[in-house]
Length: 471
Ligand code: NAD
Image (cartoon, rainbow, N blue to C red; front, side, top):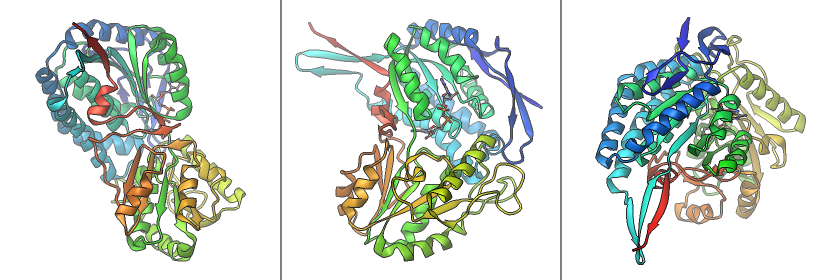
């Protein structure tokens, strides 16, 4: 069986000091695929030391040098793209097309970093003063299991572009993909200590990171509950914090929308990445006058969302990432039924013929009200709640009546009107008649969906301190 590496410190992979170990299970069939021994606090302290020692030299590198490192990482990831796609399928269960798309985006994120550096003004004049923007220091980067390469790339590219050194803590639940990305960074030939990785229990590694005043930045992507814990603890040493957290995104179909386009797109928004997406459009608001038509279209369109082993065919959904996820989704489907929602598509249990592995039935509930748990809590699986409304303003109010504010979607025949409505939504992004990704524009959430933004120049600034010089 494969042994996944968990510690990369000072320019090399090393045997962990930690001794706790676990087996990585493939969600495709529940079989063991790898072993990992977790990094511990001692490993983390070594990683912090290496990053702190590498900081003085790396923080003084030129934009050209840093761009060359970003380009080298991009090239190394592309060389390993087939390995990454395979690991993303076998370890995580991604559909094949999704696995390729997500890993190519991870590579191109490093080119985005170069584009940002081409134009970014690190020195500006403000009134009578010179204002310089300096790297914030040693950055601890926490990433989740549902977007391993993509989340690592976003943070590593921005931190490196800014001139920071790094302690990377990927999710311990998808360590094989993280290992490959770390091998790519290793092959890119950065100075030793600039990027370090410790993979293991979040709680254990966080202890060492929070205790160290040398770590001056936390950039965390993950659940809102853990993000809040980290943010509270970061205050003790006043670490700067960026949080990319959960969502319960609203998708509003307006009465003038082309339903033939809007309804399949709504399912795509809800079921993307097997439904395990922070930006999943998991609440669908439909005009009451169009509800019957939308229901029929949902039933028809749902047939295209096929589920199966991504190694065996071009399925739209693979299994959920692990047993805990499978059980969580089963519980939420039961909660929906208990709350009195009507099952339109899917339901409890495995899809037919897929009793091994963690496959679930993509599910659509209608007759949902915005105060039901299935409309308020982040389910993080392919479960869509359809909520009807009478007036547009009622839809906006219900969309905003959520603890989260990451993303929103609007379908309308009048894009100018949709843009006006978008201004009323309390979310970091609004997609109008599209599911397009813009990797250079800011991404992040209002309310409990986070603090700060990633991507582009604004994302870079999350890794910079500002200094005013007056002479
Ligand atoms: P998680 O919060 O459980 O874990 C995220 C990271 O934190 C992991 O590296 C984990 O090891 C670490 N961690 C877990 N518990 C910890 C603790 N008690 N103390 C310190 N560290 C701890 O999140 P997850 O389950 O890996 O990811 C799913 C969540 O991430 C969902 O809520 C999803 O919406 C969110 N997410 C958000 C974005 C975004 O950009 N907003 C992107 C992807 C995922």
